[in-house]
Length: 52
Image: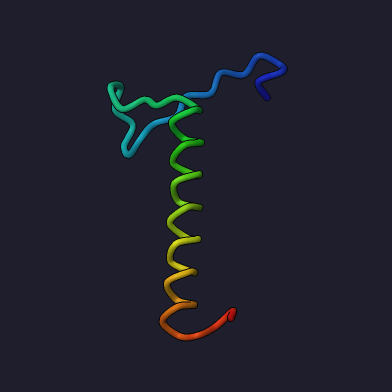
């Protein structure tokens, strides 16, 4: 879409002007969620002995 001139605006939470975020911010959030998921899986494996 961007290649044909579309404008994309990302917002954190509700549609409030001062809550607009960048693509980099969004990608960092995705990366952080992935890190948390990996940590949770490692803890589960340690607690329940799976994946060993």
